[in-house]
Length: 423
Image 1: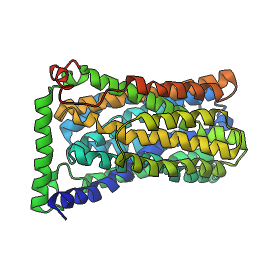
Image 2: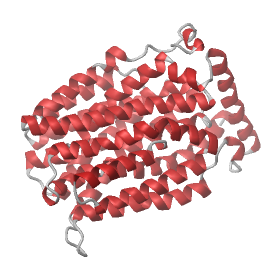
Image 3: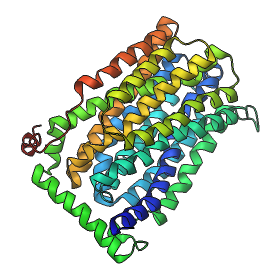
Image 4: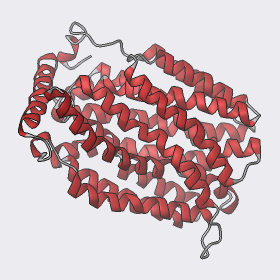
């Protein structure tokens, strides 16, 4: 085994499983409201409009605090900032058990988004400190499978917790928020002891391995400095950054517009129990996990994943049988989630330091604006039209816009304008 293989294999084994675990917990706390909807509509008289706005308003908190939070991470360090984020969001997520109506639902979902705002872009930035571009796509793919795994395990777990309805005087959805929120608090304290800030801090690497990773990351940083400006304002004014952000907006609008309503849609069309809905909803994301890993190893284009995702969303919109519904959700999940590691591989090569923190955060922030638009539109349109056919068909069409607005693959020549900070 070469020094390169040995060094990056150790880094992957040490960092990715832990980052994977904490993102599973984070993502489950973000989307478990989709399973809670199965009871919230009856217990608190929530319409699909109220639910859609509340589910999506999480992303507005993310939009407002995303860039400042990631800049704070670049200043104070990933270990301390990620730990603080996890502890705060875990407490807020558990506090969702106290919602009494639409107003408290909106406030807590907004605060949850504000607390988590720097988490995902912070981890993306953290990975640029450890892995050069050639290694980062695979690391991103392994990390991002947490999204689908959160659904694979979260579906049955959330469905099972809903079955605790009236245990110890609490509703099932209250047990769901409480028991799925507290693990984030525990893992926040674990992060303080486990996570190493930079390769230079990693005593689990041999000296030659540590020096090799530091040299490789530094070499790539110097190359980025030659290709473009490293000022925050230039990153925020860069045209490619904004186009990446718009692509992310479309992907998350379609993704959250679909997945937040999968449990309700499945129950409406099948009549399954809460636990059965959780199990059925988990099946597509098992396939999506494998698809994400495969996509990261097979090219970098978004065309195939986007087309598969759009086709799956349209099938889901109109499917009535459990089999066809499962097929549609599976294709939608496979397409949308396998696009993620391919999408994030390119933006992480553009900047370094605080400019990278700002650029990555801006892309994530714009994406989460789509994370508000998608669920809010789906909920409102479902109430107005009486079904999911219209909103999901529209989201599938919007998803196809990705193919028109995505930036072209970067070349040395293409980077010339970026150096001026105008893109």
